[in-house]
Image 1 (cartoon, helix red, strand yellow):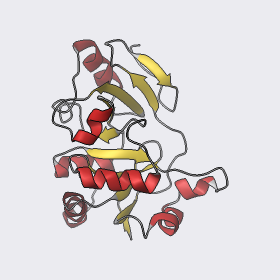
Image 2 (cartoon, rainbow, N blue to C red):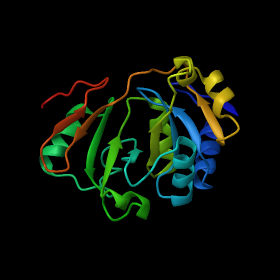
Image 3 (cartoon, rainbow, N blue to C red):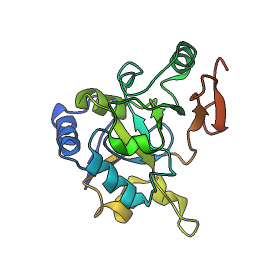
Length: 204
């Protein structure tokens, strides 16, 4: 099922509908400032397991990431030192994933790797959803095999064609991108670029 949202002036009814789905353990597909992504309530372990099953993720070996609307809203779920905080403040919102030590408030599934990716996309739709939810979203980008057209990752109608029967809602935020976020590890207190993607770091 597709739901069209815009950069601004979305109805409160539509946002509340998404929040209700997430609170009930539902899985959505939504736009970010890079690619479209799977998402669910990051504090609901069964919903996280469902996302991992859809994408075929092994949580013992694959880093899990969460999306929030600002840094303060994720500070209780991760450990952030002063240097990392300044780096995040200078570069977020934006197309970055910061890897940080996981805190104790995240579900057990995150603690298998003891670290978590933090995303605060420059996207008003996900900002509005996370702010209304009052919690972060688990987030993982759509997967497209080498045999598939890249449009299946960028066009909401084709995303619905492929995943519509496996998720509870697909948010149409317009055509998505194909470039991944830049991943920066800050686990050891020093910033290290693990994967160069769309974002170019400021203050590194």
